[in-house]
Amino acid sequence: MNRVVVTGLGAITPIGIGKDQFWNSLLQGKSGIGYISRFDTEAYASKIAGEVKDFCPEDYMDKKDAKRMDLFTQYAVVGAKLALEDGRIDLQALNRERIGIVLGSGIGGMETFEGEHAKFLEKGPGRVSPLFIPMMISNMAPGQISMVYGIKGPSLTITTACASGTNAIGEAFKMIQRGMADMVITGGCEAAITPIAIAGFNSMKALSTNNEEPTKASRPFDKNRDGFVMGEGAGILILEELNHALKRDAHIYGEIVGYGATSDAYHITAPDPEAGGARRAMELALEDGRVDYTEIDYINAHGTSTYYNDKLETLAIKKVFKEHAYKLAISSTKSMTGHLLGAAGGIEAMATVLAIKEGKIPPTINYENPDEECDLNYTPNNYIERDICYGISNSLGFGGHNASILFKKYMD
Image (cartoon, one colour):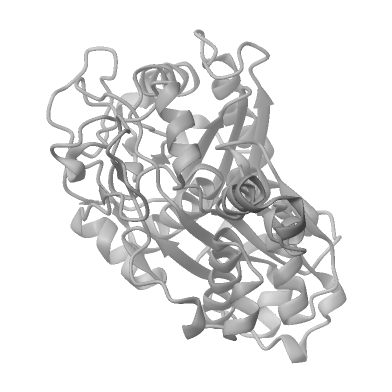
């Protein structure tokens, strides 16, 4: 089986655009949460989100091309551009039939869907844009990347709700490991801070209503957590077969060595109360990587800041890691970025790889009130320095989807 390494990173996030801004903001404990600016939230219980700031697609692509893409696709295309540049990848020198694209998106073109539906109601079916469908469908993110860069290998979209980005990275890893591709552009993208999406999550009572202190609203594992905060953006990684990377003298961030994916088979939104699915996903990733649980140093938790997720993810970690659970460093970077839904796994995989590479574990900010049901080390409020050999990134999604990916420090 081929070894697979990470050679490029591209980030579009509420705490910064580009790998360096994203990583530095994580270490600084910077919150990207604020009041929603795109629509009037007077009638909404939750008025806050993690919007991407200072994003202008025309800085990265032709204005006409940008107008033919929903925002989630713009994020994906720009994230891919940044990742390719970060990886110093000359596509003209590579066999683009051996390059794939596997992206996760939980919802797809929600902004386009809402806008065209409003036009339909107001002006009738004849005024709906002919670009409505190709802008809305979630596979258009990898589709547009393939067209922009002439990439002709497998091009796939994974939709498993909030596990989408992590499942995408896991499937991309397997594609290279099995020899189906030399390189895969992977991760997740999402842009669902829209009126009806926020209304829907509000109706489920899933969102934080701590509107008085937006930057403190996302507080994973804290006793006073009251729901997640919506985020948006893209996290794009370049995965590459090791020898392919070495031949072009690539900079290697780390190695991906394990992947686990499971289903709860329990409920459409609630996690398994025994945390069986999340437990097995981590166990499968460890088994796949042939790594003992005592070797893991860091977990980037799903950590949504909802009561049941944080409680049950903690339970799953305890079941997998036993006494070692209390020696792990754990953090939820959603405390700073909010929850990017299908893109969450992309930026959190990046955070995990950078933590391993830099020997620095980003914090869980807003951790002020310990919860007796969440009693592990969540790296509260400030980053710590620690040598990390192995790290896991977890994602759990509505429908009972669970995914874990296992990264290792690269050593030639």
